[in-house]
Length: 221
Length: 221
DNA sequence: CGGCTAATTAACCCACTGGATAGTTAGTAG
DNA sequence: CTACTAACTATCCAGTGGGTTAATTAGCCG
Image (tube, rainbow over all chains, first blue to last red; front, side, top):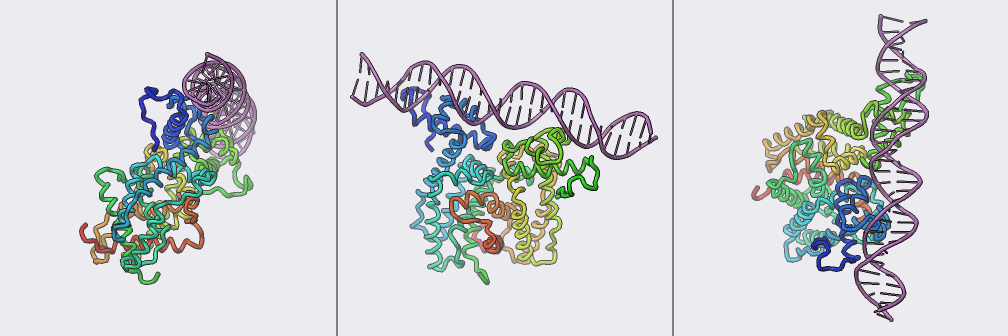
């Protein structure tokens, strides 16, 4: 994330387009994640920035495009993390576990991202659909999963012929739910899925689940 | 759901508090699910009703309380479905699968409910927290899961000592994600998780996953 | 059938909000 | 040093949206 954290206006240029843009994005990310698309206030975003509201329209055009830009940046972060994934040297079981844990960690570390995705789903992914950038990314993780599944199947470790996208969905569901629904789940079942002392428990549970699924012998499939 | 579907004003009373209330709730459910809390318009809800906006304030007090009422009713529906669950006669493996499928079916059949839960999580479950009704419900499914796990463990079918709430979270994640994130997932990975011809595939996948997890032999746990 | 109240309607209010207009200045190219 | 443009500020505005005030009527009870 190109988070802006320089001491305000000391040293750098006073008029720095890139920094102003980045600062708006930072604040907008937080504001949209906090209140949803309609609930977010452009005035509020401007107020929390060193700039004025006019600059938001100057750089992004409007609220809608600003949200799209926020989404684009948020997705680029996870793409980056996935690209740094290196599991080629591991055996398939360990590799899948590693990949699942990366997703687990990233989701936990970026609750704002999760909220943005939830919000975007409420709006039926219309901003993603409108963004060319987001349209053609896919996920680097998918290729990795595909390769691991391949080698796992060849070596006979993985019994089932599982699709990479499906497995990605399975892993994501667990990680996403834990972060996205922690509030209602906590309120209804009295359990904090994000509690620090439960972290390892759920991280292990995810890996166990995925590995069990991949290595189980299913009668008919 | 106490959905109002009588032909408008023919036959019944003109002034029917219960029906007016129910009608407002029906429309409000759709409107909140469509646009999120902040995005939903009280005027719009009123317009789609046979009543006026004033009635919403008359019966519910305000937008916030209306949303809470919508949530309360939505949750009561799933509670009901869970209560009708009868798996006592099945063996643990079949029973768990049955329960998972019930969750799967219910989530798929009630996308508006899923959206409301997503929305409520954006708002950190503040409405659930404020509602006494929702505070003390829990989930009938939990007791069922607890019993199945117990008997599965006793009979030696289930290897691991799995917690009921955790298992509920696992099942819910998959079902919830599939419905809630179908738009972003579809836009990014080009796969419609809700496509009718994939339904059985994912329903089976869920059961396989849960059973595999419960019956896998894990080295250390 | 008279009267009382719950249910309902119509019209209004004003703070807020996304967006626009117009004018100002820092930085830089020549 | 000048002039030009990108970056920026100050202020306003029209429509919206949650909420309200006040007047009206259906339906029931005695």
